[in-house]
Image (cartoon, rainbow over the protein chains, first blue to last red):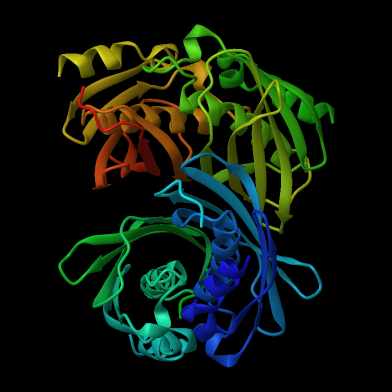
Length: 131
Length: 131
Length: 131
Length: 131
C-alpha cells in the first residue's frame, strides 16, 4: 500500500494537470481534476486529451493496485458531453484480470454525476513478481 | 486558413503540454512534443495521457481543417513502445469523411521514425455550415 | 414492442448464426448462441467474429428498443478467454443516450457466468421520428 | 506456408459465412465475401457482425502468417457506409509487431474501392516457438 502511495506521488504528468487520486483499493481507483483555463481546447471546452488523461490516471492506479507493473496497451474512449467548468471525477474498476492481461472500465463524471466519457482499457503485465 | 491558424493558437491545453502544430492541410496535420520531466508517469516513461494528447491535437487540427466544427466522439489508442526522452511527432490523416461523421488515423513516432502509438478516431459535425 | 419483435425476426444473420434474442426492454437486451462446430476458428476455439456477432445482435436490439433506427458507427471488443463449447449469453445495456448518439456496453458470458468478451459500442440515429 | 494454408482451411466460421482468403504474405492477407441474403440485418443492410467477421478472417491470417499462434485481444471497428449487395474485400496489414503483441489495420472495401469499415486490432502470442 505504501508502495502504491509512492507510485501515485511519482506521477509527474498527473501533477502537471492537477489530477488528484482520491482513493484506491484492489482493482479500483478514483481521481479528480478541477477544470482550469489551461485544460481547454480551441472551442473553449475541456480538451479531449485532458479528459482522457484524467481517466488514464485512475486506470493506472487501479491496474497497479495489484502489485505488478502494468502497462496500458489499448484504450478506447467514448466522449458523451462537452464540459468547460467545475470538476470531474474518474472512477476505474476492473472488468477482468488474467495472468498477463487485464481490462478496466473508467467512467468520467461531472459533479452532478453526469457521464462525460467512458474509457475501456487493457494492460499487459511483463513480470509475474509481486511488488 | 487564417481561421484554422487562430483555432490552433486558442488550444490552451496544447500550450500546457508544449505541443506545437508543425503543418496542416486538408484533412491532414502534424504536431510535435518534446518530452520533458513533467510528461512522465510513475514508471518514468512518457505518460499514456501525454501520448494520447499529442495525437489528439493533430487529430483535432486535421478534423477542423475542413472548416466545420468537429467534435471527437470516439478514439481508440494502441500503445506499442515505452519512451522517455527526445521528441515525438503525431501525424493525422483522413480515412473517411461523411456528411456528419469522419474518421482519422494518427501515427505517433519518435525521432528515428519508430511507431510509438496509433490512434483511430471519429468526429461528429453538428452543423454543415462553413467556417 | 410488436415493431421491435418484427425487427428482431428480420435479422437474417442472427438466424444464420443461431443467435436467439432472450429478452429486451428499454435500452436493454440479451441474446444467446449455442456454440456449434461451424462457429469455430482455425485454432478450434470460438471465432472472434462469432463472439462479436452475438454481442452485436444484443447491441442492435437494445439500441433499437428506443423506436428510432440506430446504426452502429463504432464498436471496440476486448476478448478475455477462449471458449469452444456450451452456450454464450450477451447482455447489452445503455451507458448514455444523447439525441443523435448513444453508447452501449455488451458483456458476453459463458454458462457459468465467466466473462468471455466485452464490447463498447456507439450508434448514430439519422432521424428523430418515433417508430 | 503449407501450414498457413491448412490453418486457413480449418476456419469453419469463414466457411459458414462464405469468406474466401484471396492471398497472404508476411503480415498481410486479403479476404473476400459475397453478400448474400443470410448476411443481412433487420434493416436490410449487411450485418455489422458479418463485416467485422470478414475483417477478422483477414486479420487472423495476417497475424498468423508469422508462424506463431496469435490470439486477438482487442479490435476496434469503425463503420463508414451501409451496403447490401455485391462483394467486399478485407485487406489486413501489419502496423507494429513486438515480441508478444502485434497490431494490424484491416480495411474493408466494396468492389468500387469505397471504404466500408476499418478495424484496428491487436493480437497476443503465447509462445515464441515457430510453426
